[in-house]
Length: 102
Image 1 (cartoon, rainbow, N blue to C red):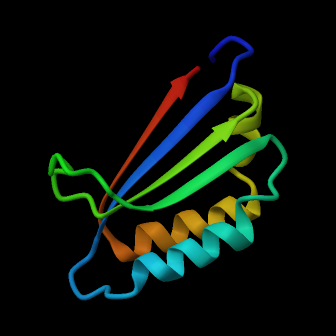
Image 2 (image 1 turned 120 degrees about the vertical axis):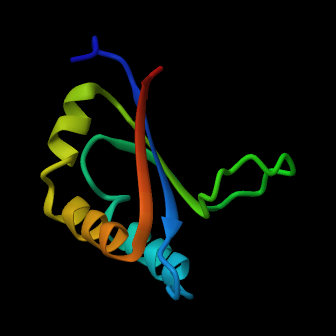
């Protein structure tokens, strides 16, 4: 486990074929379920706005800043996270999760 430091949780999603509108629905779920979870400091989500074109097929990102590694550990089984995670898993072709201590 990381030392007592903030953690940035990055989720990259490639939507499954034929899942038009999945990003908008995901954004609504994120806004409804994730912002109020204890230990969440900030939530950003949406499509890439990069001009580099290096997304490697990923369509959408979710970035959450947590106050600590303990907050991440409590978030993972939290029922509101499970709702969003299930939606992302059910509607994506590929998901990558990457956590960085900051």
